[in-house]
Image: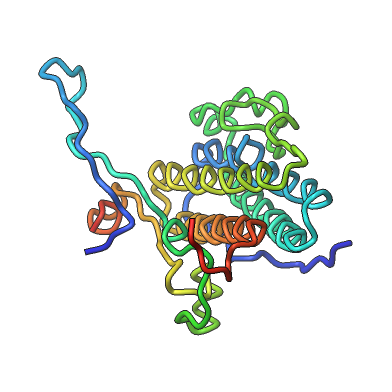
Length: 189
Length: 76
């Protein structure tokens, strides 16, 4: 069960009405390496991992939901007052036809979210390596969005999210070290 | 000096259709170097840590677009 705090993990500020940025950001909403994929991946994998690392996946999976909420807020702010003409210029007319200004779980190219983006192999090392890769992919995606964005307020929020990806990758790497059980041994290979 | 921004120079042809980008950069985030986090690393003050996204100074590595500021995203 979760307890909901009615605030964002980090303040989301957007300086300009820029639906094109929303089109990029939706990648982190319903894309293969987005926050939804991350949350679902970790919260699902946690059942079948060794007890020592379940808590980590629980915590990170939960935090990903908070990130998802931040991305949703960014996308919403960037599009809520955009005219159909502006949405058209941003290449969002297919989205508008299907969803008006509603958010939807699809990637920047409009491909709807699918469970095939994530995996649960049941092998702890395999699953944790996938999680590390997912975090690094999300970090890279944030870099590419920051490169494309000219909104300093938005970039501030994106930088925060990217920093969290670094921390998550670090913790998953530590989880691998825990499972290797070689941390406090003198190593002579 | 250590940096988490690495550079390489890809081959450029005299026949490249676009003006070549002579130096490409990529990021090697701090998590690649730390291994299992040792105890007693320096921390940010709590309020600052909340805004930076990490408590640990060693993991703080903000990314700026090379197009946003010429000084922060290009490896310096």
